[in-house]
Length: 68
Image (tube, rainbow, N blue to C red; front, side):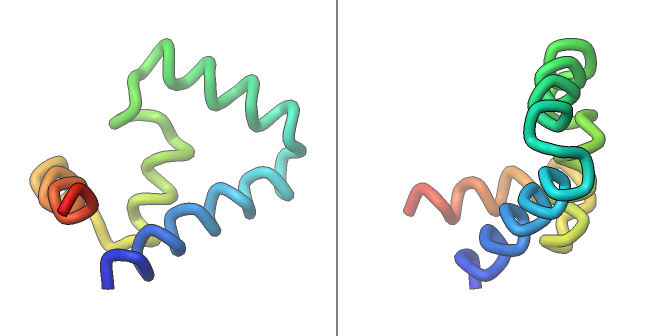
């Protein structure tokens, strides 16, 4: 189950690449990451929603599963 969620997350990033182009996506991703941080980065918000993760607690629980 955790792999399916992670694959959904990464598939959203691939869709973002296609939608905006790799260079623009990369530049905007870095900008948002530096300005807003990971949690508020709009690209990460979109990808987490695809995983069914809507808050920091759910996100931390998922990350713990990945390390097991």
